[in-house]
Image (cartoon, rainbow, N blue to C red; front, side, top):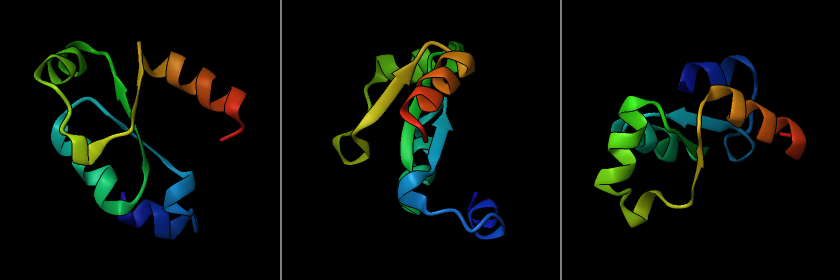
Length: 76
């Protein structure tokens, strides 16, 4: 992810980290990216376990398509 940020000269605060697991959410947070949890089978387990406060806020979407639609509507 860090390499992609550099390659595309993306600003982390304006970049989404899409995740299904806590380690992926932690990686996105560590890079300073916005975070979204996809409610796949793994994502539902992650949500049920609870997301630690230090990773919040985390947007939650049913799937990749819902996340893409929301991000497109937001303009980011």
